[in-house]
Amino acid sequence: MRSPELIMNGRKIVGGQAFGKAVVSKQSMSFFGGIDPRTGIVIEHNHELRGQSIAGKVFVFPRGKGSTVGSYVIYGLRKYGVAPIGMVNVESEPIIIGGCVLAGIPLVDRLDKDPIGIIETGDWVEVNGDAGRVLVRKQHVRSR
Image 1 (tube, helix red, strand yellow):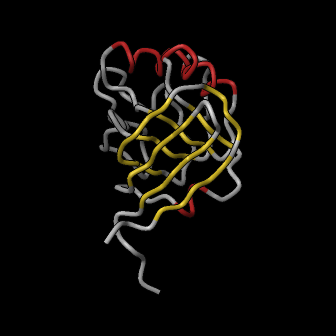
Image 2 (cartoon, one colour):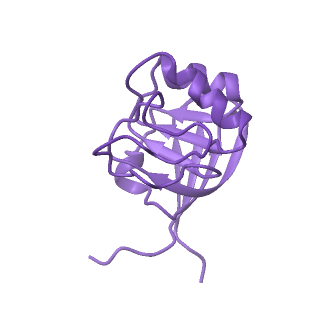
């Protein structure tokens, strides 16, 4: 039996396609001081993902926060081979957009459904930055 699938449409920001497992945060992310640029591990104190890696994952989070240096941290993640392969935001802001442009990371936001409420860590996610589309394959069905 195939996993349930859901397609969400939104705003295309940075083109390209990414396919992989999701890591999801309900909290905003500051890349400058919040992510170790050499490992891709969340280091921000009191962040729900502290100690977890975003490397090679589709990173789903509400929005960025903090210093504009965060754009260069995203680029540094790519340089060190530990960047997320795609990003999905509720609402992207200039720090995240600039970083994804520099690093060539597909980015989509303003989806027609709340990605934070639908996508769970471990779900398989396809980000199509060219079309502004996100496909989610649930890895388990929630019990009601």
